[in-house]
Length: 359
Ligand SMILES: Cc1cc2nc3c(=O)[nH]c(=O)nc-3n(C[C@H](O)[C@H](O)[C@H](O)COP(=O)(O)OP(=O)(O)OC[C@H]3O[C@@H](n4cnc5c(N)ncnc54)[C@H](O)[C@@H]3O)c2cc1C
Image (tube, rainbow, N blue to C red):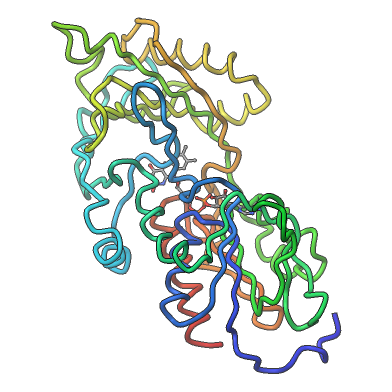
């Protein structure tokens, strides 16, 4: 690109945000509040990203993030201001710690801080924050960005190639800046198709993430007369079983259907080793481990397993976001700071505040 073709100090008016997880939405709503014209492109049909919910005939499952913490007061204020009533404390912050055989090692981790969940399901906060953007016609769902390149009519701006979104307008042009709010691996993939984006790709070279197999189980038989729940008395546990790292009784979360449902997350190592396995095999193996840990040997009436390829950051970027002022390309997401919902929020917020302030 010829840098001379780019007008100096052009105001940053039209901004594209790729990804409508918590980072992208925190970023987009802050920029909108600062008077910027924001367009959000989300590959899925729903907002929320890894704060995801799957519906079953027996009730919903939080298939990604299980709960979140609220340590940063800006996160607290954002929840109170624009998502009031959607965050509730989950009493399971007394999380058991189990050994590899399912025996309790620590009855309840001290409740250092509250565990929050969104109600009625985990993606409710994202949905609420997305409402003003949707009302502006600025939220494109089912719109996967395939490429970022210089605007064909104005070399100082960017255009996006978008698949889906009705496909009537696969090219969205005229953006002064493009911000990626996707997980680390998709960010690399998107940036790698634009040779201009090399400085960002280079900056995130050290970021590492790990996958997570997740199994969902429903036991409607526990609702039979005389039975309240199957298995253990606890509702959430961390486990050192080689296959399973986390188990939670979905039905114990506030605002959820009462039918007994469990979400099981495989350990980092096991998920990595079994990335190529088919879901049926994974279900069988994790179900066996689940029975060993919980003592629940009843056959579930409904099961579902899925692999999150970029579930958890193991080596973060170590700063809140990436922003290349000359290229006017940026990136945010949990992987900048850590592996939690709150990290994603802070990353998206800080990128937006920097842009609103400095450009
Ligand atoms: C199994 C699991 C359990 C977890 N448990 C917890 C927990 O208990 N507590 C906690 O705090 N955190 C937890 N996390 C982490 C938490 O979910 C994430 O830190 C947070 O949701 C990340 O938000 P984000 O906006 O950075 O990214 P994401 O939520 O991944 O959002 C990125 C969005 O970008 C979209 N996208 C990707 N590529 C494109 C493209 N090309 N075009 C358009 N859109 C695109 C995706 O569809 C997605 O919606 C868990 C995560 C997983 C997977």
